[in-house]
Image 1 (cartoon, rainbow, N blue to C red):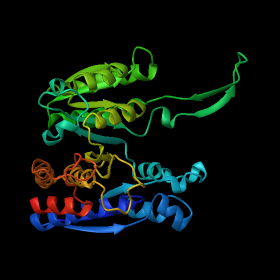
Image 2: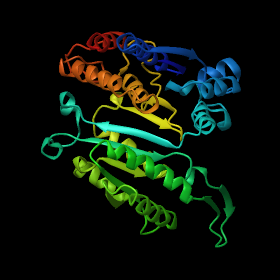
Image 3: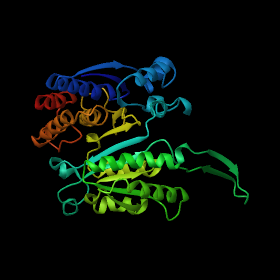
Image 4: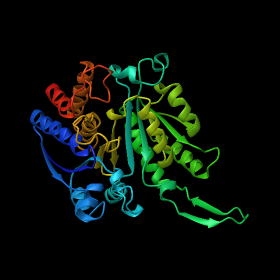
Length: 358
């Protein structure tokens, strides 16, 4: 099979980590008989430098025509003083909108080889955890009406942001979560704030109704404040967490940090057809850009997600994940994971180890 992938290397360490991931995909192609064709385009700060704007129509069209998008990272202090409407991060929002990406999928898995990096006590972690946060991307308070007005009580300026969700948006993300749970541990935790918010009451009613279509999957509801607590109290209780844009933004970051290794964690943003944009959850890390010491694993694992979710290539995805786990089990570490005095591999060396395992 032949797959066309739009590549947005972006800023900071983006070009270094994406280059290693592309080499992994090429190795997968050799091993399994696929052809991956890459077309590189600009977005983020590098696009501002080249084109004056963070996202061009050319980049959008290339990404829309591709079978999938691989993204590194955007932004950095170099562009902190540009007008807000032209900040590098606007490229991400623009791509999400143009591609119709509504489901952000973030796995948070504790590798046994990295258990010592987990900030939670070993007796709580037990055998580890394997969580996926399924976050809705197109609705919620981020996309409601925003503004300021004068207080009618004489208290000065009032800022307001409208939180809202349609039944359609909730149904769409709920089905995605239940489908994922079906091939995992068959458990969905829906997170809301239904004791306070009308938006959350509509969310809970809708998710409960959709759950009836998946009688083989267990559903439980949890308030967001309790969910935040439970993630550090007993993360092993979760399988798939489905939630809205705001709560998902917060909880997915929390879930990633309890693994103790943010440089390890991939993500996928999917549309209704299954096409998506795949990227590591970490930022552009401009302080280490160009030094060849960034951890490429999150980007490589994002490629595994691409193979699984957009291309239906589960065996190929499994092969990448197993190769990464073997590298860790064999004691290989990049600088962000290495203990004091322990040898740290370069970005390229870690990529080479993983490709060798393949």
